[in-house]
Length: 153
Length: 153
Image (cartoon, rainbow over all chains, first blue to last red; front, side, top):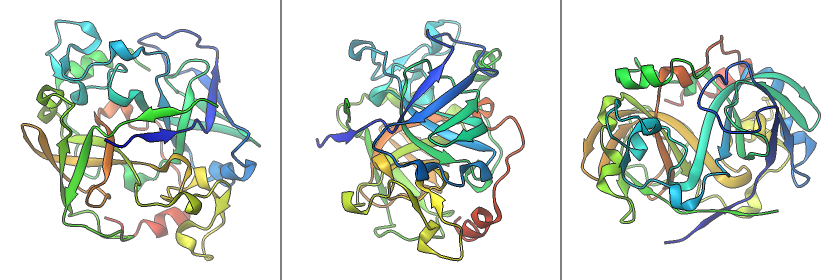
């Protein structure tokens, strides 16, 4: 099957140097564009309050990736869930997506709040959050997901 | 800079064969796992009402990619925006992300509603939408974005 080859467009700089499960909500991070991307790529971005950050879980080793089902956070009190039915980081293609608050743009850098990614994380894309792209019907989720997310932010 | 090499985990099958700007809301699509991914990857997915689909804009040619600013939809009535301040498909890394409604899981296939991707689109990841991952403060966006999205769904 054909491969898709991506290059980081930016990198995350943050005080959070090691992976932790919880308490991401107040973390501030800088996202700095790589040289190959023009300053203008950020033009007008502060018209939006929120951004979607698409990033790469670069510290997860290939042999840790789950291709079938697994317990969320390895916790057997939760149901065993397909890897595509949970947001575990050790997943095929190692992609993370998170909506953050945009605090400030400074030329080639944006400062964001609530990005659950550690220092040095490669960023693959950044998109503005438009309300039309949020769910248009009621979101339902199982109790285990609500429990897992209790202290996440 | 180091490349990140991804493989499609699934492909989109839909009646929408060509790219169109608008009217995606009622479109039903099937997403079929590739052979390398186990059936169990979808286990429990129907506990969730909505999924986030991360996909590759595979029909956009490399020379069309914008690295700086551009008019949304090429419309000069809109402000010229950085490529990371809009959701145009001809963007670095050609990644699309859309939240869809899950209609049904059938073993290795899921049926979803409102996926703005055409027949044959490679899927890079699928994640459940958890309400905690939606914006936790009020979303603000410029008028041009609201105007652009008027007939999208």
